Length: 286
Image 1: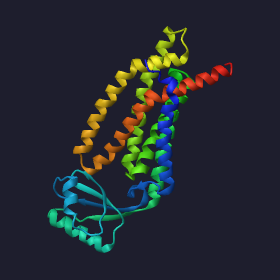
Image 2: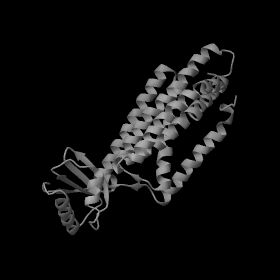
Image 3: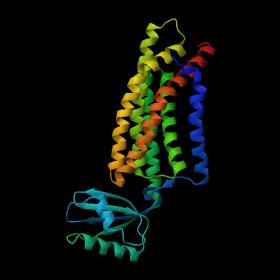
Image 4: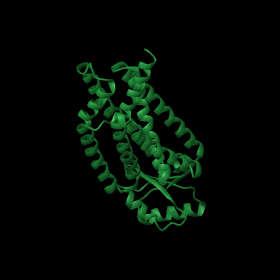
């Protein structure tokens, strides 16, 4: 049986290379933030009929100076978010909507301030922080404090990988990206808990074995379940990305990246941290 624990340097190195590349790209270009963070224009209009994102984008494709970020719907009402536009472009947008949707109401245009983006970043950081603390408390109660720290570090790993990939490939970062991060944190911690639960069970049986051996055995025993669960979820998400409209794709893409990163960290990272912390605890004579 391949000893995953003894090869921790390889698995840590793979993650560090990706994260380091992302940091370099962040320092050079920063994130490709969408108007949710940089500011722009929001156009709200009742189309009068049911429609979809592709139809609205097609109707506005001839408008010069309009860079649409997303199109959302509330019944027959469309909310179009785009980069900042001029008064001339605003008039052309209204004319194009009226031509494509004769029964539409009068569109209302609203400027989105960059300060809204700062507030969104702040709320996202707060949400992630609260989630991490609650997960730490839960895992500490269910297992032990060292396992809780290990699980939270694995979650931070997943988040850093997602940000790094977005920085490297310049994918646009919007509110869907933040929602995807929170979703992946919940998914990844579930996969990690399954492995940690097996470690706890095996610790009671393999009393003479070193903790690293127990973790390695537990990971292999949970490997099939972890991969099969992630693979089925990943295939579904990939199909959503392929067949979905742009606004759905902006949510599915970070999910795909997060699913891969979360599966990797649950199998190759979280347990490694727990073994490292256990080893340091033993050396300290605790």
